[in-house]
Length: 95
Image 1: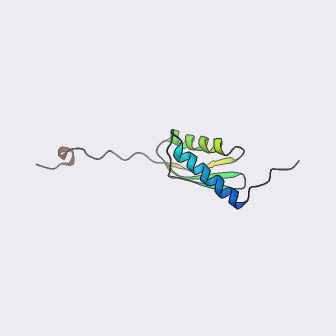
Image 2: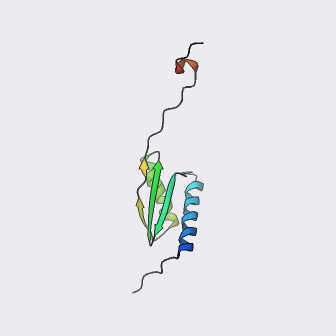
Image 3: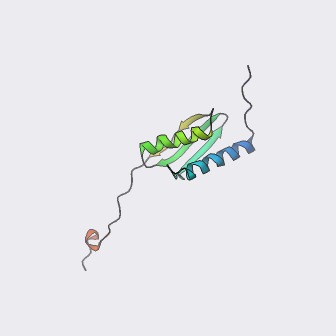
């Protein structure tokens, strides 16, 4: 039994770019703060996402675009920053 041929460096670069673009274009995500590194048949995901649901969805989208690859999701979840104050009162500024 033979294993599938590993893609060459040019193919890996194209696959990486296509998958990164899929993350950015997916209407469920629009995710750009995730890096993808392909090594053999493994995809390493690094970067930041805003929720645990997004973290899982990023891995799902990558798996959809890279069938047969093992997905190593090393992304980290960060919480939203608080909304900036909208009024002078919220800022504590006297008028």
